[in-house]
Length: 248
Image 1: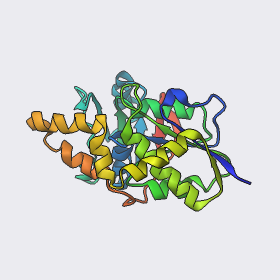
Image 2: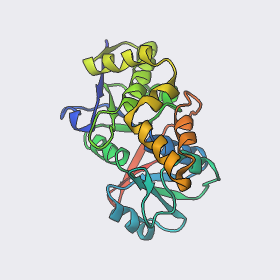
Image 3: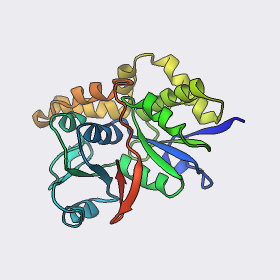
């Protein structure tokens, strides 16, 4: 029997009756960065609902907490790190909990957690592994694009198309119209990097990297986020602590 495979182009388009397994995408850059932190030894990544909760978590979660996040692509004041996956890949995070809050991705994950039985974080780097992990459970599959500042974003939709292709390759599914639309993007952009660089969000990051010396690595961030199928790490929601979503 075929399962339903739905893509929500924005978190606000997630149907109220959505259940089963949800895969949240913020490929530029929150879900890529969270995946990279765990891949490099972090004990957990917590998605805080807002900046104040993230700061409070430094006290409530315990020792070895690092705050990471951004607003408009720039590190939040008082946070230890921005939202760069290259920074996450630069050292060993064994024993650390990383608390994240970002412009788009963390909020999308909180919305997904209200509906779905399982929540996974997906990006291009872990797309094949994320699809395989989702299929460990029965039930319908929902792919949720975080978008950019409340607008549909090409980068997340392209990544959703990659996931849709993986699911259709691995099983019997009934894709909704949005799923079929995202799948068509793969014909328009065979190269993932070209798709990310063409997106409004990608263009914004590239512009920031060109105009601010402290953000010069943003072009490398975009290239890192565009690497397809290089990680087997799939963050999964395990618990909720102090209003935060804890992924391991």
